[in-house]
Length: 217
Image 1: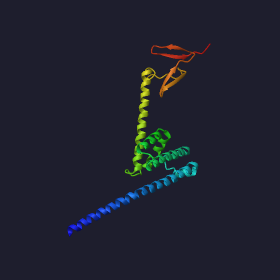
Image 2: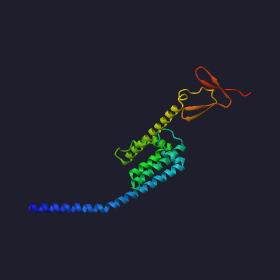
Image 3: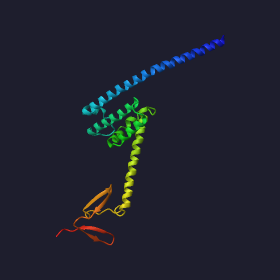
């Protein structure tokens, strides 16, 4: 008798589990559709508010929660940058973008200096996000993107300067004296290349040759 009762209980448990699985499979699409509809409505409201703030300085002042003074025109740019970022997140959350595709979109956005300024100005906003949240993880991914781009730009600048030093070893170490060279053109930041003025004759000293301007007769 006890054996039969145990078997009945096992069968009952299996039936309940099967019913729960079927119910979940039926309800899951409806839940996903409801979530997408909620995200769409939230995104639309957020975008409408940003548009109003960009058009009305009085409303933009309500969103001025930056730690430093930001000019009004810059604030409007920051609001637009926020709209671009939230738009990318929205498409990722509804499944229209994969994480790899989102990474590509953010990489393009991070190449813009205005977006980088916006991201830095709102860094303290993201500190309140839980570390385990999806938005916090995406924020860290954007931080890493900006850091990678900054390091790549620094490496490119250093390479340019190294190439300049190899090409112009003398002028890379000796800058032209003021009022002795009439015109300088720069082929790399911080390293001017002097050109001989039309009405100049060489003045030779014991150390190096300089150019001095001679007034036409």
